[in-house]
Image (cartoon, rainbow over all chains, first blue to last red; front, side):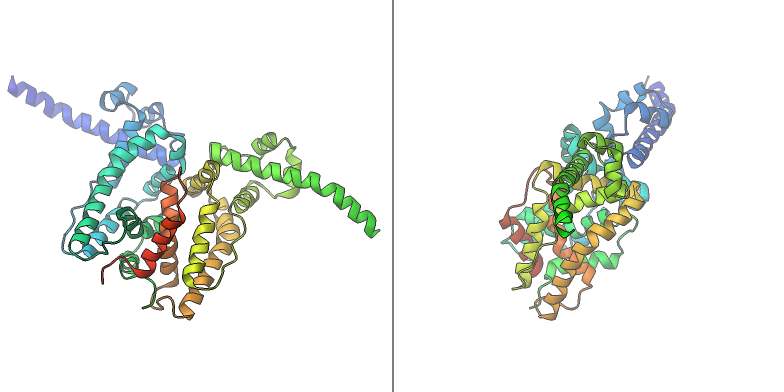
Length: 199
Length: 199
């Protein structure tokens, strides 16, 4: 019994993984081309060359599928070196930039910003399943920086997080055809760490 | 002659201004509801209750109309107090927040970010006619701050501009249902001016 089950899984798994991969890629392509408004289960199924039931066997619905697709695109939250707050924040900035390397991926990010206000259910699920675990890594790094005396302890943690992450994220949104260089990420980071006022 | 011309303008102007106003409002409503993809001259004409020729008499085409509509929504660049770089930057941040007071206006901004990559002609015109003159005010304020010794002179001016403006702009994009409080704007500004690293 065990052996048969294993063989079944072995032969079945690659096909299923291929289908999952094709479905995720089709979702990202449709999001980049036509935005959230133009992305449907029917369209994904047609693009991926699978039946709708194959999608529904794996995802509860369109919100689930879109959140999973964007989470795949972002990749897992990075492992931080923990050597200094500067090293940790630079690693986080580089990870944020990495998910946007292709024009397709940048269009997916942009369409999320643009259309999310019209899809409250998707927005809520995206914030919960994609944003929250990644933001938690940033918040933990910042808290460690405060605890170790590297960061000011008189700032609201949300304000601190916004100040530290916004330049990179905002720059990428408004320069969708370029990736920030490492030097640029360091300039943003050192600017917010040391301040831009002369002293 | 002079008198007749004045009377003509007097009686003509309100009607024409009313139509212009209705066209601009219809454009903003369509952008908020359906994004750039759902905004057409035909749709604006129908919503505003005017003929297409009325729109084409005043605007060269859809790009022109959309850029004008968003420029109206932003309002003219603010007059800066010039008393200190902090006062100037706070005035600029408050002006940026002001254009986003209504949910409709925030949706218009968001759809621009989301869809612009798909409309290069509109993107180019928007950057030139709407962004550039407003950015020039910020850049001039920053240069004055450097010249007066208030800001570090060792930072790239574009990097400096991004660091100073990004927290407010990025926060507003991701919190489309709230307006930042003045206290929050000051926290962002003082954070980037003084730096978030402990010293």
